Image (tube, rainbow, N blue to C red):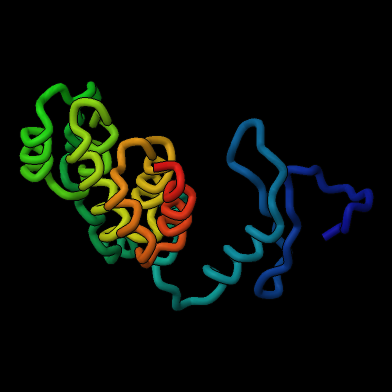
Length: 186
């Protein structure tokens, strides 16, 4: 390699010495990009001996393989048909407190955080309190738990004194901190 010095080779040609023969690697593109010497060296190491595994050849270089080598390649894994995830409702829940809880219990648990965001502190206060504690207790150290704790801080007026006192002994430090902060304000 010319190490950046002037040479008689154009930028789109890379001189190599392989198997006691001089050769020149060049791009097949009409307007080639500069060749990457590390990539060329890697390909030479991969293909430079008689016994190599055709499955290790990148897909972009498969055109250099013989028909026998192509036939020896394992079949491509089949992809299942793409089915988009169902779109969840995003409008606020307008049903009564008990109905909202029953509705949430009929949905998959991984959607509960989404439905909790749809609850209103005025229309479904009991369900909102229940689901916030549920998310914190069953999904610690996740974004759902973090969201639930933040929601507790925002909706602190939602919680009666008994819930605040009970939260003083909660295993989560942030919930205990919330309880201490709200203990005197109740």
